[in-house]
Length: 493
Image (cartoon, rainbow, N blue to C red):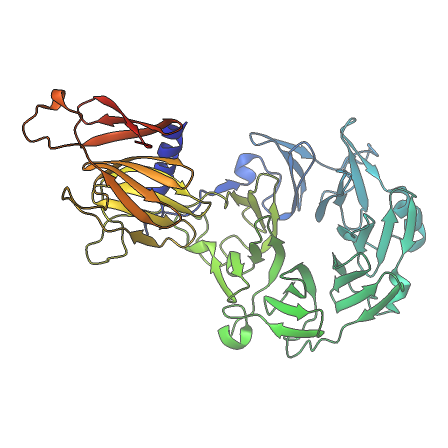
């Protein structure tokens, strides 16, 4: 097990990204792989792990190997109601829903492999002549489902089958405006993003108020808001059509523009951001019309476009068309839907490859290029045994600390560290100059050496040139020297 862990860590550590290498391995999924269309509106995952991809021409279910396509069949009332699927949503009960615009909303029946219409929604359609196309489906913290439509907002409670029309609460403010997204903040407060701006919905008072927004100054002529995620307990990142995105503070009710390169006041260009994702690790991903898939860092307001990655399949601006949406599956893969190139997906949880080596011009580089072993120190640090002694690597920051080393018999610092074992607060090291012991709490070293070897043959004495050390039982170490001889060391005596 120790050998496996050492080899695994060696593979990871010896590969952290040379500049010519990419941090991620990207996968593409398009019409060449049997996707029904390269224009991808939405991506979701069901309770069985299947990835569903809604496109401009059909719905696709991907099992990791092959794709099953679904289309509307006018002769089958349980087929997909329309061939354009704008949104895919899995609720807290693991039911999966599909928004099909003017063709309505359906829920997938796993047992019968068919799509079933939401009857309360269907009942209001003849009267409204389908003037409420379904664009998005969301959920509040109480599990109630919001059906976001063009000029309408409905709420459906599955447990009671209660279907409510919330549109009157807007007092005409969303007439002819699409409702894009509902973002819960607490069980009593949600925020509603629309083509006409942002609304605050107090669920306890059942009251909706529009938040003032200067669409000329901040929206460059448009107030359309597409998607959003909370950055922290107060701020929401809201994607928009021309300024890329804005940041809204729910406490002060103030908006601030996006930083460069999204802010048109700085870049002199409009960019549209579609989907926004805060993944399970707290990272933010944006689907942008010009920069493609972007990782955004709220702490310092910087961003990184994945088009800079050498292995990214579409490195040029707007090469994949618009960035439409971003989705994270339960394995941590990030899926990016585009308007012209289908889907790109990758695994950001895996550390990219980076090489740590000795740089004689940099004292903070690794102590030596001969790497013999590793030992963890907590969750974030690792000891590295090298031909020039002991180094300690911080896995989060990449910083390296090199301990002093000595090659004389009276020195205490380890040199040529070949093997490790830990017990309690002690790190035992087999070195080319005896056994070294580091007290982890005090960072103090001890070196244990055998008696003078000058007049003895290797087979006559256990030499100080050690290759392995094992903690076998309380108070006892087993040592292996470079001649293949085993010995014991009693820690007490």
